[in-house]
Length: 266
Image (cartoon, helix red, strand yellow):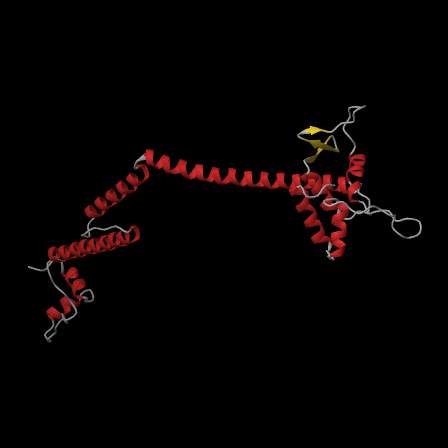
């Protein structure tokens, strides 16, 4: 009985078509090289391929799990998806707990931070307002001082700033009202007895500086004859200053000191 699948056998052994019949019917000896062939049942081959595929998939999955574990900083033992899922759930719960943990405390912390920032802002605003006020006050003081000193004649015995200081130490104060400088004493504006309008700074200063003016010399170039200076008078202080060669600083300091302690009358 002839073989029905000779062509299939020839193909399996890598023979040309009809070669098997030729070799079978030939009187010469022939052999087929089987060294490069692996002959086994198909079921075994298919089982081996299936196992290779399974092992490859498992290895690829384990590599992927390892990379996910490293990337997310997860801590777990094992290489299957079950432990990965459990680790991810644990990570998620930790994050969720940190986000919503003690909302009252979180609100308190946020409010404290907000209040601190707001406090810093208010402090800066207050600091700026204080600085601005100081600048405005200094500007006003300069205006008042200039308004005062510009009416002081040049022939005074002390500096104009000293006279301004003396006026304040004697209880007078100066303020700007309606663009003009007014003089106050005991908190009340000094007014003209006839008009009841505030006394002008020019006329008041000219009267106030009278004791500080230098003595006018006579026509012969010599000072007018005057009686001896009374102790405690301004003239006596002048003579004392001349005798001791005081400079202006020493003179002003001594005059201020004696006015305060009542030993000098102007």
